[in-house]
Length: 370
Image (tube, rainbow, N blue to C red):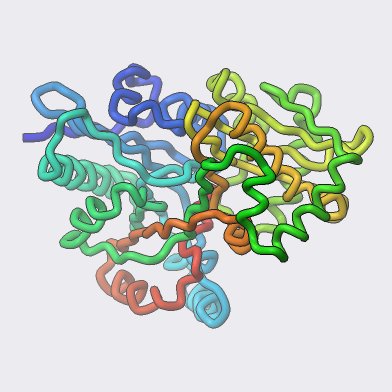
């Protein structure tokens, strides 16, 4: 009924063929092609395609890498994982094949228009089968799904029900509806404590210069230094971005990618990569020098700058990512839970991972997150 293919480069598929399945998603062909061209160390790229009668009816990105399992655990679970590494180091760094992208918000499956729910489920099952066969050829012992798209949660759950995968909670996605006319109306919705705190933090604006750029240009080396500082503060991160990533996003997404740069005097202290499509402002990466950035409340200034941009452009939703969720809740965001899935080819190891799943950190497998 279905024919499947697995590509190793999006260069082998017309842009229109891919994007037709994803409804013009921000993290569509151009974004994934930018990720592919960025030379992220240790990654191999896959694009799983499903056809019926010669027509492309389903697709999803995937990747292959070596993965340190202990980055998935916290507290007592991390200690157990470290002990297992000492006894069986090979078990703790499996070759991982994962549906999704390390640099994308969710693992989203693209479908041709007009498919019934039953057809979509059949397409997804065919896609998973092709993905697993390719993973086996690549010598991958661990397979997973990074942040299954919440909009497709029922579909993913149905497809995974009989495949041997285990579900673990992922880091929730934060977003804010832009259903207010101005910042004063927005502030009035916050708690009195949050409103008072935000007004105090906004006083820092007078000392900060914010520039919007379509590329980082001469500031790229300083931006990469800020990125590396931010990465060093993260609990876990699988991918390390390169200068080529930021260049490629700017080059391949004109009109949809923009950088907000935050200066105090002539010092660049933070930058923010934003993607926008007429409906959504997607906050991809905010990187900041810790001490001076916090002293000038740059994270919160960026929040309000981004809300102002949404209002200026008439955007309907601000999606702010999967970090600092406490602050985002306090600032009125909605949190949408996501699920991740994993399966090990070795039945004994798979059983052990299922038993250990309750020890997974709240942002399980978020070493894979962007």
